[in-house]
Length: 335
Image (cartoon, rainbow, N blue to C red; front, side):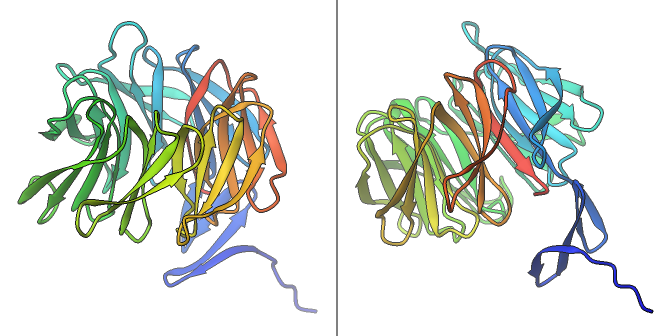
């Protein structure tokens, strides 16, 4: 009698099949451990969480008041922006998610208040809010190998394309989005454009097809859409409150917004710009990340402080865990 080994097949891509073995995702021979990480601003720690069981595996001390975190492609390293509370922070923590240890704390001085983070091509792009710049850190060389000024106040978050030819920052103090365009990987041939939009843009995301920037406005209770082909304001979407974060689902079909005043997730159809639904929560939602298929959202919430695992289709809370005090920045990979 022949025996068949059964696999849990998640997806079929041009480059092969993704299988799941327990808590590991296998992609044509490459193993990536499923890992969820969340920053606790009041504790100054990073919580490493199993996204399947929603159990905290451990906590690692960071710099003062960390705000944002991203993961390397293999999920082995977490990069943490130590923003600082009363005193401006000036470091980035590199944390090994397996050993639960800080590998290195890189001093970015004279840059201050590192915040928005983005990993592309093995390098870390980040904003330095006080200095009004976007910079790039090379972990292998352990140095900053490029930076460029935004010329705008409060350059807070950063998003960009996978080919490293376009980046965008939200500038809270200048009511603008700054576009950086390059002939190739920075610094090759640059063009900088400041795009005037509504009041106090903070939340920002780039559509997966690269055609639109969506920026949440802290003051106007709206989202401004920017056409990346023309680098001009395109459309305002009134949503009746401040969206703390604005995130496209991986397939680009929906945009999920954390609405802090009403304690809900607002889901908008990206094509029609119309509201699809609102998912009511018992806490105030902040950071949002998604599983690879976009069906599950992991959300940091406060009052009470938790990390939630949410089915976006049904709105069901699939799991929750106490990660620490004032969780905010969040990242996930391998699931």
